[in-house]
Length: 112
Image (cartoon, rainbow, N blue to C red; front, side):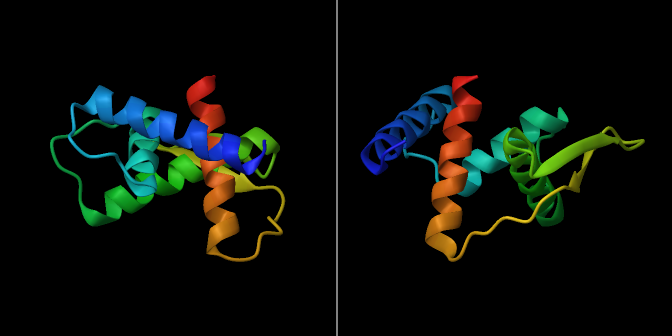
């Protein structure tokens, strides 16, 4: 995808999530990763600890990166949390490139 297309589709995803959550502001990447983590784990609670939020975002990132074979789903633990094995290393330098990759993967996630 070209940069303008990623930017446009990323904004569409943010508006979709904003509308679905009934929020006034557009969500940031962390909020969207958090929601994907909830979706992927099936763990829905009233409140989450800081560690649980970090774990949910980690699950989201691993789930997104399985699309290109960077991670492999290896199963769920006794609490139902998914676990992944890293298959390849990502050759991405810098926060901007990492953010762009995650945006593209989130767009694919919402389109599937």
